[in-house]
Length: 422
Image (cartoon, rainbow, N blue to C red; front, side, top):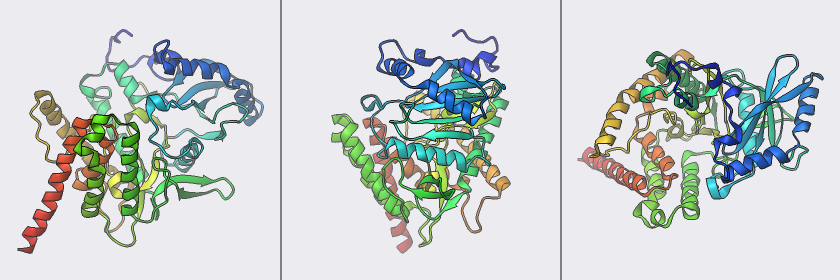
């Protein structure tokens, strides 16, 4: 694609379903390309059109030519004769050899979590309305699916890349700041909802009640305490590493990082009372699941399978894929490129922290006596959890950096205790 004449002003073709390129997102002959074509040919798409028409009181509809394909889902736009549009999102067959299998919960339960989250947030953040869904892979369509409203927008990271925005910005400096402020408001809104258990969010169709159940990553839960959750989460991280990581990752000393993580959380976690409360968070929240218009104004939030009620350390994380990556605590870089990146990131981290603080105050979501989420973004406890997130990338260099950081934090804790006792 040639560079637009104005690198920060999108054309119509870059926003919405006209930008979807289908199987061409992957090279011909690639396993992902072949899977996309097979799904397009195999599924009973006519049934989805018939169902959509019935749900729309008989209004005829057709599929648009373009479709979007991701790692786990295919999305096709449905256009009704009355001018409105929905999308049909179908689950793709698993490719564990390509993406691994880090989520222990089955596909049906994961889809239930996503639908529950969209129903829960429909009045508080911009999410597509769900009209129908099925978690049964043997249904008439031939795959689990969701029928929901079409939101005219493009994933923020994709629009940024298409526009070749400079310096990792989302549009112009003013557009970038407005985008990040909106992002902070969404994060603050999610964290304002509290529960008394840890786990993923579910919806009871019979009672219309929301409840906390098994969490998607470990397949376990709900939990009543943060330490119980961290125990199971760290064990799951070790199991995933043994099953998926290369031998050099498994034989390195940093293979044991989840064990250090577990001990550090017993030392550094924020809530240590008997009556803990847990906020909602989307663990995969970031620019890759935010739909924006041509000016990078957020018009929709997508992909909710990572939503859960979680301990505060999980909630106080910076959005991903936004240039807000934190370094391991105490890490001293010597590589010029890394030093330049760290210095460039510092003011962005501070700015987003201030934005989140403003959003929390505006929302009035801070309980009496509670510490604001923004105040904990740069805390040691938040860093400890980030280390476990980075561990899942299964890279020796990264894991070794975090092992050194973990050991520094352990030493610092007991040195502080010793000094206080003198």
